[in-house]
Every structure is written in C-alpha cells, then in structure tokens.
Amino acid sequence: MRNHLNKLIDSVPEGPQKEKFENEIDSYFTLFRRYLSDKAASTSLDWDQIRSPNPDEVVAYNSLKDDTTSNLSKLAVLKLNGGLGTSMGCVGPKSVIEVRDGQSFLDLSVRQIEHLNKTYDTDVPLLLMNSFNTDADTALIVKKYQSHRIRIRTFNQSRYPRIFKDSLLPVPHSYDDKLTAWYPPGHGDLFESLVASGELDALIAQGKEILFVSNGDNLGATVDTKILNHMVSTGAEYIMELTDKTRADVKGGTLINYGGQVRLLEIAQVPKDHVEEFKSIKKFTNFNTNNLWINLKAIKRLVSSNSLEMEIIPNSKSISVGSSELGVLQLETAVGAAIRYFDNAHGVVVPRSRFLPVKTCSDLLLVKSDLFQLQHGSLKIDQSRFGGAPLIKLGSHFKKVSDFQSRIPHMPKILELDHLTITGNVTLGKGVHLKGTVIIVCSDGQKIDIPNGSILENVVITGNLTILEH
Image (spheres, rainbow, N blue to C red):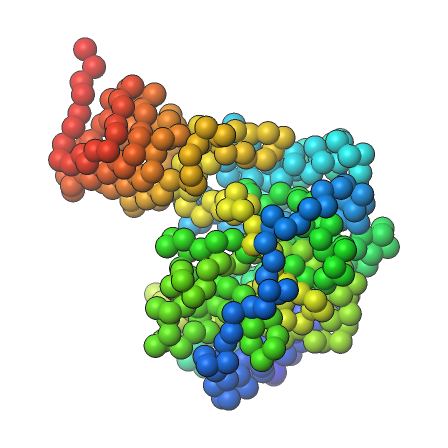
C-alpha cells in the first residue's frame, strides 16, 4: 500500500499542492494501518461493561437557565456541507436544494446567522466544510452574500483514495484520476481539515472559543444561547445535543458510559445478539442529533498530539471499471465519536424541534407545509399544533425532488395530520386538507388523483381515482 501511495504523491508537480496532498495521503495511511490492526485484533465493546450515562454526563435542556447573549462573541458556526443531493435525485450540493419559499438549506443558514449578528450587534462567522464534490458549486452561491452582514468561510475536507475490496490497494493511479476513484472521509475528518486549512488558527486569533457544528440539512440546528452559556460556565470542551428517541430513530447513535468514560455507541458497534436491545426505546432513550459544541483550543491540542482515534467505519461501495462493477471500500470516521477525547464532555437532551433533518422528500413535505412558519431563516412549528410532527412516508414515486414537485405541486394542509402514507402513481390537487391518519395506496398500472380542495380525514384510499374537469 505504501508504495502505491508514494506513486500517487509522485504524480503531483512540486509545490504547495503536492505538500498538501502528501499530508493528506500520510493521514490516510495512518487511518488504513489502524483499520488493519483493528480488524486483526477484532476489538469490540464488551456489552456487559456498557452503562447508562451518569447524571452529570447527560443533562436536561430545561435545566439550563442562563439565556444571556454576552458569549456570542466567542462563537463560530460550522455547517457540514460535503454531501451531494443524489439520494433525492439532485445534481450538486444538497445544501442548494430549495427547501422553503424559494430558499435553500444554505440560504436559511445564512439568514439565521445574519439575523443573529444584526439583532445582537455581534460577529458570528459561518464556516462551510465542503468536499471536492461540493466546493465549486458552493463557492458560486456564497458570492451573492458578499454585501451581507455575515462572514462566510469555506474549506475542503480531505480527499482520500478508495481502495479495492479484494486487494486493499488504491483505485486511483495518479492525483488527476477521475473523481469516482476518491472519496471524502466522513465528518470525523473535520478536526484535521480545520487545522490543515488554517481556519482553526484564524478563529482562535479572532478570539473565538467555541464552534457549533451541525449537518447542513438539519433545519432545527440554530444557535442556542442557553447551550452556549452552559458550555462556557461548565468549562466543557465538547457538548453533544441528544433528543428523545422515537420508533423512527432506532438506529441513531447514543451516549453511554464505558469504563468510566462517556462514549458514543453506534449501531455498527453493537453485537448482533444485542441489536434489538440497542433499538429499544426503553434502555436507550435518546440519540445523537449531530449538533455539537466544541472548544477550539481543545481541537488544536488533540490534533497536534495525534490523540483523536475515532472508530473507523468501513463503507462498501461499487464503481464501474470498464464493463465490470467492482467492490471498493471507503474508510470513514464520525465527528460524534470524538467525544471521549475531550475534557468534561457531556450530552444535553434538547427538544425535538432542534432535530429537523431533510433526508428524503417525505421530510421535505413536512418542512414545506403549513406546520412550520419561517422566521428569519428558522422554522418554528405552528403554535396551534398539538403534539410533535406527523409521521410521513412517501413511496418510490416521490423519491426524486422533481417527481415530488410534479406530484405534489401545492403543499397540503397538515396541521391536524398524525400519519400519512402515499405509495404508487398518486397526485395531490390544490388546497388538499389532510387530518388524522391518511393512507393512499395506488396499485401498479392504476392512477389516483386527489381533487382540488379535498378534505381527507382518517381514510384509506386504494384502487383508481381520476376526476375529470368539465
């Protein structure tokens, strides 16, 4: 492997680009060697040593009282912006998908921070960690905010070589090899990339102390001064926001106490005979939202000492080589797994409103609907809503954003909806009102058109339905 990686380095002309690439490849080789040794040792958690976190390791949000804004000057915000919108049928960064009122994920994030800076006369910068897949498109979008009251900085996470599953050798032959030969190594790469880009030192020089990190597609992840002040007052170097688990969240990672240390337990680490126990909402009552508050000087200390060794997640993919499909591996890490390396690290159990991810078009329907009101880039649930958000399941006909938009061109009213399932060739008309539990199932070869102005309450619709206009 080392010889192949050296050849990749040699394919880059002398200069700053080569130096940066060589550092990335060295980091990758360290990760690869750790993967091999972990695999050989087959180190796994001892299930009998897993304990629920101590009371000081997971605290309730409603116990946080201090809501002053004096610590905003110490804050920077970072959005994880490396993902593409391919799972929703889009080309380019996921953050540019239109979410609400013609605005994208990125637009909403910018509006939130800009409103914060204006309201409290502060200077909270917004950082975007891109991947080589999203960097160019994001740079074009960021230009339109040059005259706004917000400083936006972008930097790229690492570009690592995919390896063939059978030989464990790199897919690329040179630095300029096609993009499918490379991958961004998960958001655990945040720490090294933040240091390597120079952005960490720049933030510390500006007097910034705390970085609020969240996924770019989590519309609930807004700056919260209560959590910020709690972090400052407790001296915690790392705070993870958790929220109560529902049956829809059974695979989410959770905080545990292991050997007297707080750690993140992911489903991939759970022995097969304990998976159902892990999924239970009785034993593990909350899960990681990936909203994280991290001390900047602690990041510098841990990266400088090479102390961060998060669990490696082998991600299997396949790529086309000639007429064949070959299996490849991506070695990734998760930013949440770093919690055990930080001093006084703990979780805060936050309201569900702080976890509003948009992973599918089912989620998109939710955030576009009348259930939420848009205020300065933040989505607030309508006060007349009783209970949490409804459960929405849209079938494969709605997987792509373009299909979703053509089938549901006008958002239905869902303020009184509990559960919605739609599968098959279904379209919704204008002014449709959904209440209670609504299930619409269209069989293959059939078509269901829900007419304009329909009120559907606690109904199951199957078969074929088309209303002709006269």
